[in-house]
Length: 352
Image 1 (cartoon, one colour):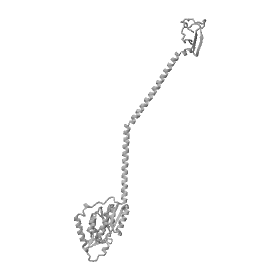
Image 2: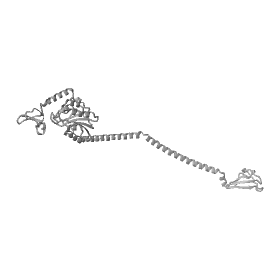
Image 3: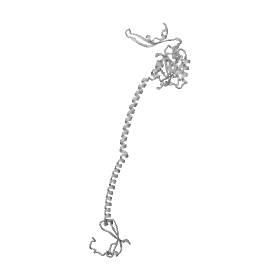
């Protein structure tokens, strides 16, 4: 047995003691002899503890308390964990150090109890205190290593049955790796040491951070790809809408309307020009037929002053009759005298 495997119980051994030795067997080839390398020693025969252990183990196993089907998985997300152990033991400090290092967000609820020797009632009471809570995700039962006598309280039948009816998953972290108790078999998970129990219930924050970073990178890639696909789809829809949109038809119709408006305006202007020219022509014709225009060329209109009758013939007037002579810029009044009595002219002769 190597020095680093020696425990206080080994120092108490005397020549002739009956023991239970755990280890491995190898062959020393030089001499051709077998050797037993011991890593744990327990006293045998004292109070027949080992036989009691085996009998209780067989009994509970027959009842199905050790069946894998009744074992519950530990929760993947843990907010609070209950711990049943001694408040002054090194096991508690080891677990707290590991929890602070790996997952400081975990809340630890300690239900203190002595874990040395024959203290099953105290352990059961500590478990019952935690069972009355509804904020725990798991429970750890922990103690450091020792002899079979030191760990015997975790081989108690009532303790085993109390652990079996826990409302949440349980972890047994009792003793060292080579130590086995009934609590280990009935708990949902067996941890080789209290420190290992703390590691089982806590995720490593560095691993969680790395996992979250990987998830973030994956999510970013997925979102980026999804945005790219959606942008491409939007572009395709925009092209389809541009092809089918009435905006193009409206633009074409507006262009045709503008062209029709321009042609209509040109037609109106051209029609106005033509009509203006016609009006001018009609005005010239009317001006030619205007009596004032005729008078302006030296003609005059003679009317009787009394009746206003236009004199068209010399036979219409008599001597001493008053006449009005209208010229281009006014009227003249005259009286026809006897010596000026008109005479009839030759109609074929020009009056000028």
